[in-house]
Image 1 (tube, rainbow, N blue to C red):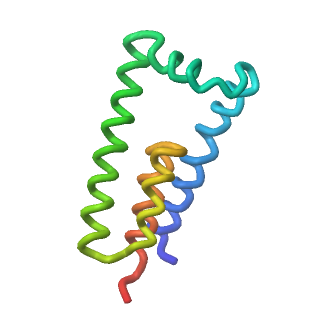
Image 2 (image 1 turned 30 degrees about the vertical axis):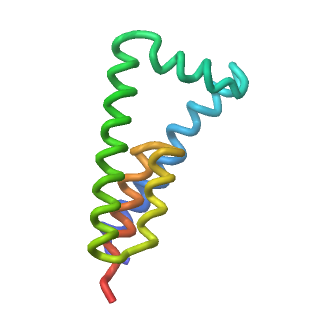
Length: 105
């Protein structure tokens, strides 16, 4: 495995673990109340800006992944879409780059 692929993999793992640490803390304090979580994302203009920034980035990444998969037929790369929306762009993007950078057969 190339150094670049290892970097993408490490970033994908870090992008999954690090944000989840904070989500787990929040859920431990507030319970699994998703309505309250969404309210926290819109508590002020800065939080709304970050939430929209990440939402737009996730949508752009999804469009890119679908277009690339349609061209390259790398169907495994589609798992980056649920990773993006289920975990975050910090996991989905490096995961996709890791999957996309594998040697072509």
